[in-house]
Image (cartoon, rainbow, N blue to C red; front, top):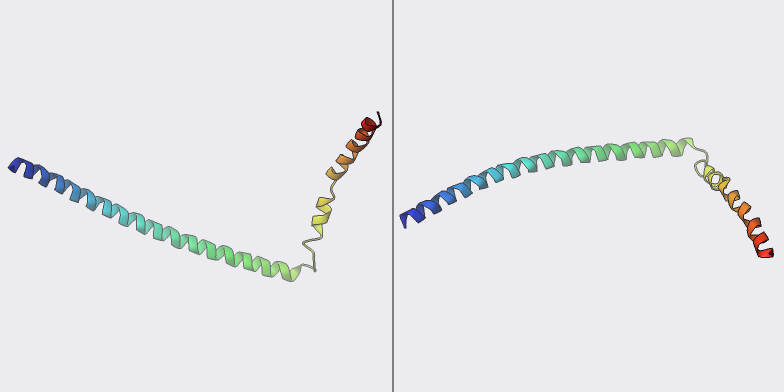
Length: 96
C-alpha cells in the first residue's frame, strides 16, 4: 500500500509540475496575443486613416465623374470585335 501511495504521490507531483509549466506557457502566449492584437489594431487604424485621407483628397481633386469615364473605354476594347470575325463564317456554314 505504501508503494502505491508513493507512486501516486510522484505522479501527482509530476502532474502539478506539468500544470505549472503549461500555465506559464499559456500566460506567455496570452501576452504575445495581446501584443499582436494591439499591433493589428494600430495598423488597422492607420490603414483606415490613410484610406480616409486618400478618399478625401481624391474626391476634392477629381472632376465630377472623373473616375468613371475610363471604365466604358476599357469595356469597348478590341476583344469585342474579335467575335465579329466568327459571325460571317457561321453565316457561310449556314448557307451551305
